[in-house]
Length: 271
Image (cartoon, rainbow, N blue to C red):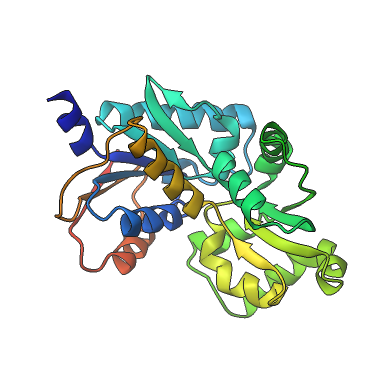
């Protein structure tokens, strides 16, 4: 009975805003029968400009809220929050973070040249990626670049056009020589907001640099943990439920969600 209850319980996912939706989209396609609860901490976004101590406090509060809603595991769909909360469990339930997933993706994709890592300031200052890669015995050379203007673009729904192009030019100016000289082979989007700008980033960087993120590695970890009985995935042919919880009401957020799952029944709650 216990295992059946655990398998039916939802997977809890959280981020400060719409960024984590890029992760949730991947998960709902990969695990269509799973139930998901997404907590968008919209009252306190963005996390990327705040201190690690503050972000850790926010992360623990989000984890506790999802725990009280009976989730069976947690996905911290935010690199900044992941860098502040690196533990692999919360109250005995597994926690999946973007830092480990992103590091595994870098190792898999790089061919030995430099890897460009685009992230928030807080993620970069934490040193989490460098430490994780070191723990994985990797000697990948990272070029760390903060992209603080990307998050507000995504939160405002500005995903293409002249403003995005100008922000890209401004943000990537410090590495323009590396791009021109083809000294980069991978660009990791180390913020879950950034995949919504992937097409524009790919266009700017050119065909010689592979742009990637953490979602595929997260999927692999979830499948592996199911195989190893660390957690149970739902056994059903029916589509899972989607519930969204916001800490502040946002018409833009709800519109953003409905555009991505137009055929799914979605439950919105505010706290």
